Amino acid sequence: MQLTDSKDIKAAPETVWAAILNPEVLKECVPGCESLTGSVEEGFEAAVVQKVGPVKARFTGVVKLSDIEIGRAVRISGEGKGGPAGFAKGGAMVRLEAIEGGTRLSYEVEASVGGKIAQLGSRIIEGFAKKMADEFFTRFQEAVEGPEDDEPAAVEGEAEGGEVKKGWFKRLIGA
Image 1 (cartoon, rainbow, N blue to C red):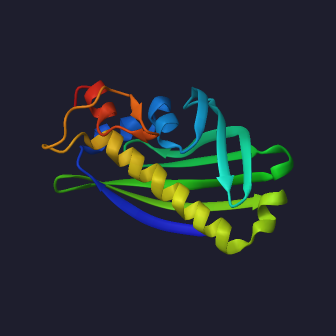
Image 2: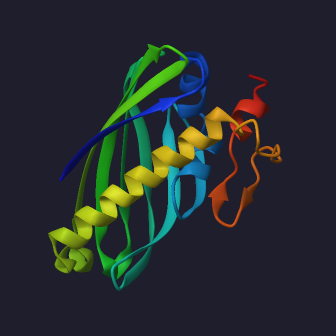
């Protein structure tokens, strides 16, 4: 299954690039992520809890960044095992393009699952995959952009109600 979309982020391409390589940003933006350790060079180990239809599982696995074109593009790929629930693997090719007022982040996501989760049917799985991708990139956009002028500033990196507060990364790096 493949999904394609883009987000226009109100931040300089350099800021967006720094955020996409930052493990703290990735951890905060992955829905259900309990831990993410490692480095860009060596890859990351992750633990994520997700519920797909009636199946809830804790997935452990690896996330790697490859096909890096500094400041322009990166492939984020990962695979995880959820015990009896099965496995999930996939990736996203992320491209950055400078636009007036910020950066256009375009992504192509591909995902596959196996085991008990695969028995749920393609409609449920495709809907879940789309929701996960949308949520990740929306959280990413909010972490980088910062608060709207009429919103109060949030504590950097802090999450409230399971949502990433807007702009914590941008404030963290002083952009």
